[in-house]
Length: 260
Image (cartoon, rainbow, N blue to C red; front, side, top):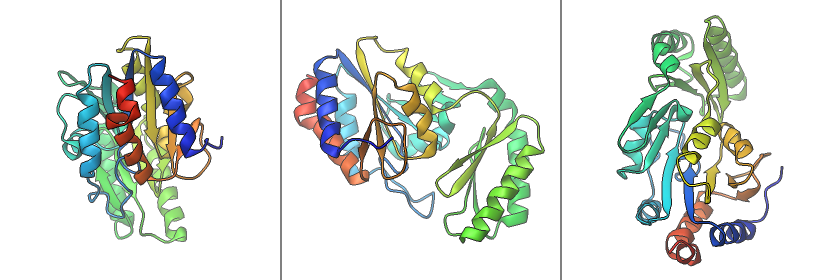
């Protein structure tokens, strides 16, 4: 559905925080906290977003979680804030600050994923960047033509489909190889929500098709889609600059006062 106006996001947060005992604030990284880059290794956390997340994390009634398709160690290194929760590989890896959990089926499929990466690199390596993330891998084709992109997607889906227990998920100019298990970002955020009091509000910000599972799961929370396109989120922000403004408002503005 079409998200509401940017002003509506602030109004919705204000109403929710005024009637809640706390906030579980969850967010994607690429395209949300940091702009999408042609080179997947390039994105970094803007300093103003780091300051806001640290300030949010320091509040007694706020818990911060970053939920990413990147490997857990990768996204944790890019954020660099200790003790917040990180979910990597769309929730197949979870670090709650004192414990790291990996989905057992995902661990067992790492060898097949690695073998597929080798094969894809041999076939279309000149057009793609294969990001190996342990339990999953992402094939990026951001610089390929439309025709080449279709060829890459068809190849990846065909090769993955030939191996039992391996599936694919399409993203922004990418396709992901992952174990065929009933797990996604939505289930990961639902698990995190179960770990905070029922009287807290849960919010999630994301920009990609892989974030839609969270938006669908948050029937009573705050779901915010970043960018254009159809979405199940109830609210929308236009870009990562608007995310930065919202984070600042939550950490230091009227949103911060509501969390005191």
